[in-house]
Length: 131
Image (tube, helix red, strand yellow):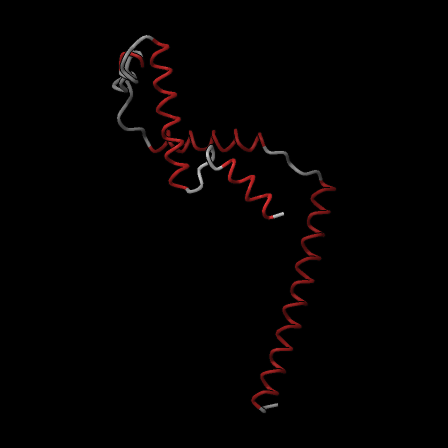
């Protein structure tokens, strides 16, 4: 069966790169050929110039430089309220079920850790002969 795999692999090696560097090189060449095709379709000989992008991003000179701390706190509180409205709150029954599950799990883990602690304490006492 391994011979079949090797024979199948030999036929595929021509189209499939075997190392990471070869894969990166193949991706880079594919990207550059794609860019050339797009630029030829658009009719311009250069790739991605400011002419093809359109107008520049407008400057933010119209904005105030500093915002008061009260406005920042107000905006923060508005965003908090908006996010809390998106929350799906559990029903009373779900809340009771989740609380019970957590308490049972924590109780089991406390008992387990306490048991392991007692076993280690007895083991250390037996090993060093103090008990």
